[in-house]
Length: 300
Image (cartoon, rainbow, N blue to C red; front, side):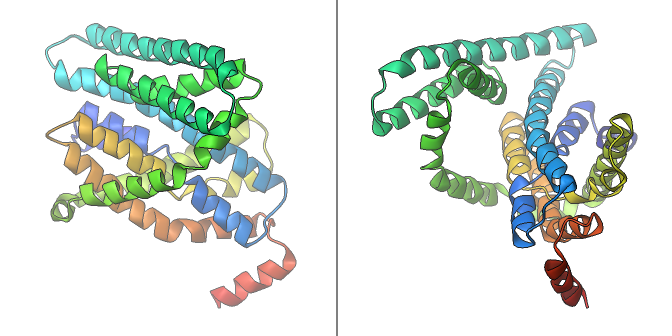
């Protein structure tokens, strides 16, 4: 819906691809906080958590693929369609190959790591090596790192140790990420958002509702899933901002504008998103009776 709507407005194909890919992302942190706050539980909540977990993983893959095509379209405007497809496919394949090769090396050498301190240095070092090589060879950093993690999880039975040790130091990285995100937002561009921001806001949720409904029908899901699952997927935050930062760095002319559109709409989604998550959980009967009474008191 985002891609189609932006193309109708006359937005270039490469920009429409980027916005459509970013629109797939959901904010799992906001959703989890609402679920925990109201002690929601039940089949609907389990499905919702599973969908959101897969949502961002697929969103990153879709974004990486769309970015590869968008860059080829933008920087090789004279190239034919098949040349662009071939070049983008090559970049995607080599990104997977790079991540897989380093993931195999990672698992092979992991046996020699003896303590958590060395494990942290080893893990961060190979992640940075993967990102550095991807940048050097003009490949997708996201796809290379994602496939690195995929290979590690599937080859190493103790893979949880690598991720646990990184989680112990990830909070300052998250902090720096949001500081950088705020520093890159140019408030002066907000006046130029116009209809693009409105179209992005509306069509993202339209796509969520239509896609969720069709998926629910095809999978013969319960009625509450068909009606309310999309409503609970409204929040959008860190993953979308990360995608926008990558797009900003990749497109010199339009990068600031892309990031400002996404950042401004993300603020709106984060304000109204938790309320709709709570509403979806309430409608689906996932909030215990005591918590439901508190929700009703808040509403009145």
